[in-house]
Picture 1 (spheres, helix red, strand yellow):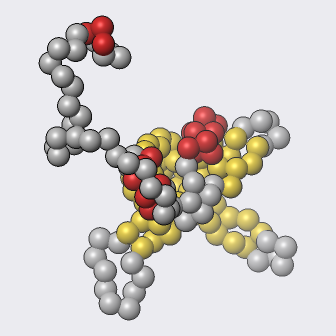
Picture 2 (cartoon, rainbow, N blue to C red):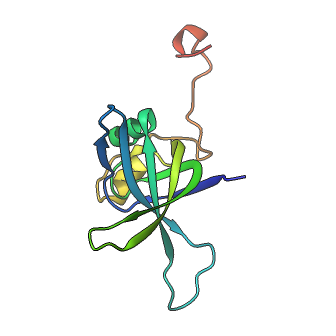
Length: 140
């Protein structure tokens, strides 16, 4: 079974290109914190990722450097010969599904922006008054 789940931060804005057939391709890398850190070693792994089609378009529209992403996908290996004639081996995570891991306000906070968070009862839920009927809610 070839399954990958990652949660990390974009190391830079995704690079988006379009194939000759019109398919959107997004290449990006994600910094994933290591679970156990040893003194003198790096704290994160930098994972190369690729997304195609609608997933790539979603990434292009909503994700930028420093923002957190959760993704599921699979590992794909390959190789090519560079201009010097050397064979280069590649390993990428192909992102099949992606999702937001933090709110827009939280990610902007990491970028130095400030945006007030909605008030809550401290338990992660917003207070909805008892007298609001079903017609006042955006769902049933």
